[in-house]
Image (cartoon, rainbow, N blue to C red; front, side):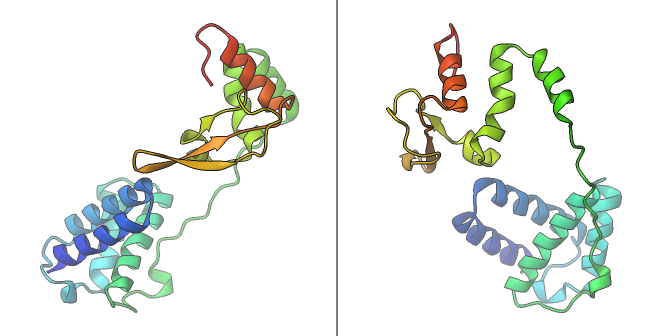
Length: 191
């Protein structure tokens, strides 16, 4: 049955991917099953179902082009893993051209940061100073003040529940070390 095949694929995804990736695949699955609710068996899925899924995302779920493309790719990965290939042509895939992000000039950033409190300034400067991705920083634990001499930017990993927690450390005296240490030392400051 189609639902069983999709759920088996999701179970495998849960074992091999991060929670955010699993959640994205689950959403794509839910929408796919909703869009082709008349199909009971995997073998019944055809090109028209996949094209209708793309239109369903765009028209019924009001998804942005980027989301349509990503969810379409997720479903195509599922179908490929299930041994179903060649359903769509290259021109059938949703098209998405990523727009160039707005780039702020240094004088604009300086004006913005001048209006920030000390804690806000550390927050906005933190990500660029680490060179890490959002998930890495969100899951990290800052030990900047406790590591004499600081060893590296991402020293080791400790087990925290079922998720890994990166330990973030910087050389003492570095810009990021000083900013975080100062923020931690203020009343109510957090690291």
